[in-house]
Image 1 (cartoon, rainbow, N blue to C red):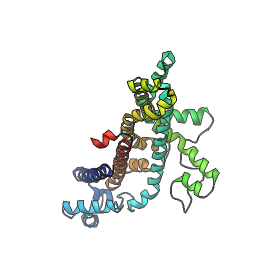
Image 2 (image 1 turned 90 degrees about the horizontal axis):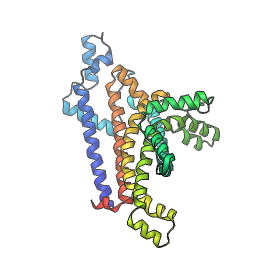
Image 3 (image 1 turned 45 degrees about the vertical axis):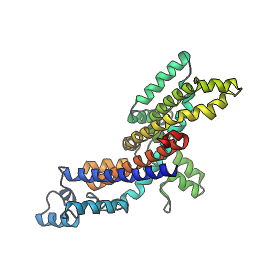
Image 4 (image 1 turned 90 degrees about the vertical axis):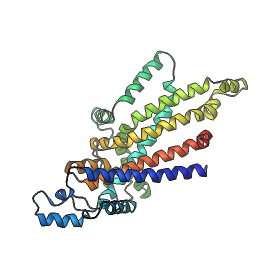
Length: 332
C-alpha cells in the first residue's frame, strides 16, 4: 500500500508540473499584452518598458518559467495587473470560501448518492418514475439547478434559505476564512447556523447532478452484486439481506462509484465558477470571472493553477481510497 501511495504522489508531482507548464505557455501565446493591461493603453513607451522590466518580462523564457514555478510553489503568484496588489493577498479570503463550498458540495454528493441508491433500484412504475426524475436531475446544468433552488427556497418559500453571500454577520477579524469552523471555534451557534444556511443552496446546486449520477452507479453495482453466486451462497448460509449489503455488496459497488466520484469532482470544481456567480459567493470563481473581464492573466493563471491542483489532489485521494477498498487496484 505504501508503494502504491508513493507512486501516486510521484504522479501527482509530474501532473502538477505539466499543468504549470501549460498555464505558463497559454499566457505566452495569448494575443493580449499584459504590460498594456498593467499601465494602461495610453501609457508612454518609457512607462511600458519600465513596467515590462518590473514584471520580469524582459528575462529569457526559461528564467520566466523558473520564476513562475518558484513563486507558485511558495504561494506567490505575482501582482494583479488590474488592482496592482499581490494576488496572494487577494486570494487569502477567496480560497477558503471556495474550499469550504467545495467541501460541503462533495459531502452532499456522497450523502445524496448513498441515500438515493436504494430508491433508484426500486422495481415497477414508481421506480421507473424515480429513475426518470433522477436522470433529468443528473442532466441539468448546475446554473439551472442554482436558479431553481433560489426560486423555490428563497422566493416561493419566503426566504427559507438565503440566496446570496456567505454570512449575515461578516467574517471574524481573527478567523480562518472558513465561516462554519470560525463559528464553532468562537462558540457561536447563531453564527455557525447562519453560515450553514448560506452554504446549503450553493452546495446543493453544485452537488445534485453529481449525487444523482453517483446514486445510479452505486445502485447498479449493488444490484449486480446481490444477484451474484456468492450473494446466493451467503443467503443460503443464513446471512441477513442487510448484512450482505453492508459487508459485501456495498464494498464491491464502491469501486466504480469512487471512480465516478473522481470524475464528478472535476465537473463540480468547474461548476463552482458559475455557482459562485449566481449566489454572489466571494470565492475563486467570482475572482476568475472578474480577472477574465479585464484580461488580468496573472490572476487567471493563479486561479487555474489552484483549481487544477485541487482537482488533481482529489483524484489522487480517490485513487488511494480505491486501493484501500479494492486490493486489485494495488496489484494492477
